[in-house]
Length: 175
Image (tube, rainbow, N blue to C red):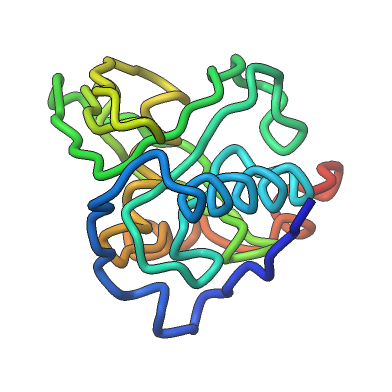
């Protein structure tokens, strides 16, 4: 089990556009995925992207199949490895929702995102993934893929009266 250090907002590596993965089913890719799983689980994350641990590759994982302790009000998301993703908006309807991030610890903000999306890419073996998602699932996919394009959720916050420290905004919530 390897828990990696999670880069924090302000680190310039989080603002880079990630490189596509060119080889699948390699020992290096499997090791990266295990490090991402271990790091995400240790931090109770809903997802994590390779750039958050300093790896400039288009790799994200999200979901665990269980209710996430940081977001107990949302349905579980199936555990997913998504490599070289693309996202297509299926509905222009935006939905606002509170987001947090392992790279922006202790804070939350309201972020508008498309409610329904299609995401495509590959799993660790190079098999095609083509799914549709809505609600929290769609939000998590978009949030994690933003990391691959050098974006952090505070860059998407429109109303900074709804952005701040969790312990101030939600005194009864443990994060």
